[in-house]
Length: 432
Ligand code: EPU
Image (cartoon, rainbow, N blue to C red; front, top):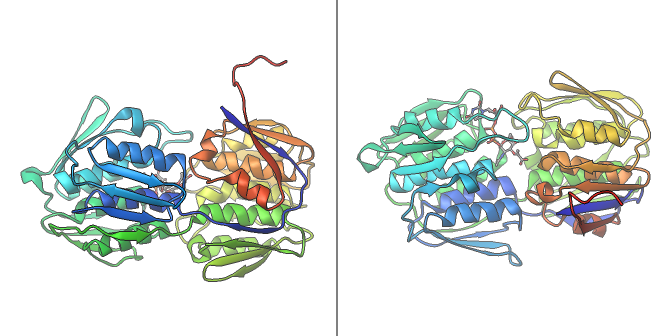
């Protein structure tokens, strides 16, 4: 297994380039299954989730080629003949569940494993299933699999309202509704930027969607979706993570620049909250500059759906709060127990406690390097951020969680001046 070793206390400076969005790339890949020819996707990051989903897709008979250096992914669904997504792959990544909508849309049938557990839970898929049923799908559960069928081989179309709004259920609904016989409507659709980008690709393929970027999306089904070439957007969560890194570990007064960035995708709440900490921000159309202040101010946040504070940035924000001189809270309203990072951060001296769905952080305590364990993607990156500002050496174990969603994290941080290296280790070796 791999671990990251970080020597804390180096001041960051310079610039870094943000990679393509993981959470947009995955639905773009699913949309490619609906095309009548070869789809080419650009700005696709080299991440474990992308290679996992490529394998899920190739089980169906679709050809997938990822040219990692060029960041392009070529998907040819011409020979798609097996409408199935097996447990062995789906259990590695929940977004594999997008296969349900894509296969129903393409073939009028699908057999897709239920995703199962998650590092924090519960993360149900009831809205995915109810949405597809509203479109006319007949769904039953069989030995851990969802078996779905469109009567007559093609979904009829229908209306559905999401409650709560869900990114994944919006994507599954749109994948299936785009090639339905009739018209459909989705109310309280997710408006996260990754969903908007996915809708724009569907539209470019010939899907008849209106209301993109709003809470109500209307869809006229069509029987032909074209092959296309589409460029993915930058990763908003990677950008937010690096902005927090710059705020806590940047050289005060000197700007750190992030290229290939789209700050409009972060939502106003995050940007306002970061400004309130006294961090200087310049937001361009495709870049962001961050200036670390001499003293960060504590700012409480509450996660919410877009344009609210992203749940995928709250673990990182907890580390920022630990670098202030006051007390503040992180209130998690989307996933009430997404706090696996807190016991690990406490091992580093951060005084954060979980009360219900809130974390209360007492800033200003000395942060010390320690051996800590990754538990999920965003929790792991919060440990790396804490390692950047800790006194001494921090070792972050089980880096495979990070590799799911951060492309070349250690390379980018080294480029900014951090002392960080990747090593192999044996998880079960006895201490020397
Ligand atoms: N929900 C239901 N029923 C459902 C689906 C969702 O009750 O059938 C609830 C969830 O329990 C949650 C809320 O709806 O309380 C929102 O969840 P959503 O479905 O929007 O989340 P998701 O689609 O499973 C995506 C991202 C997550 C991100 C969330 C929230 C991808 C692949 N995943 O998940 O990203 O946290 O939206 O923004 O896009 C990550 O990248 O680390 C990550 C976990």
